Length: 185
Image (tube, rainbow, N blue to C red; front, side, top):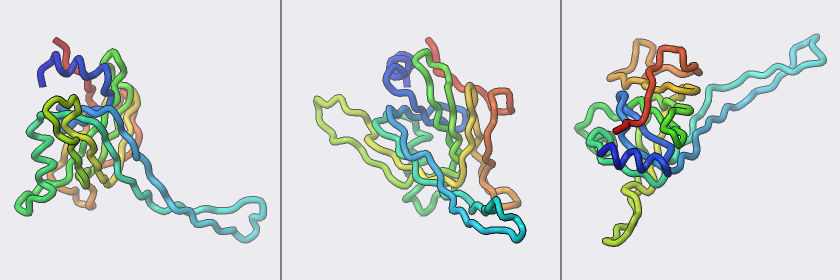
């Protein structure tokens, strides 16, 4: 996208999808970023004033990104790989980056092993001012939260020896993550 268009769009859309350190799509709404774990409660003999809990691994709900725009070939290749039986790389590590009005990164959520599971376009009309993507749903295997300037999680080509597609956890801006910003003219 041209720099002028991106700079105008940042005033209304604050959620950006980043792949391989490149901003590839812009959205005005992001919802569903959450997880849920089951808790098993039990009591230990001789400990009468506390209960013990075991927490199951998290189950992640799909993220919904609404009212977006992109012209990135990388984004459309990722979407098209879902129904292409010949495609080999379907899962990607992507960053959802939230900017403020000054174009500074406020927070980033790295979705590990993300795959699109739903896409909807708006109704096309010649005089419409609607955006190019009404809704994108993304399911993922894990999440990594980066507070402040950061993001930049790379897209591994395969799982590691333990079966992980990526890592999860919380990082601060001073960690190994690279910064992301909006292009300026």
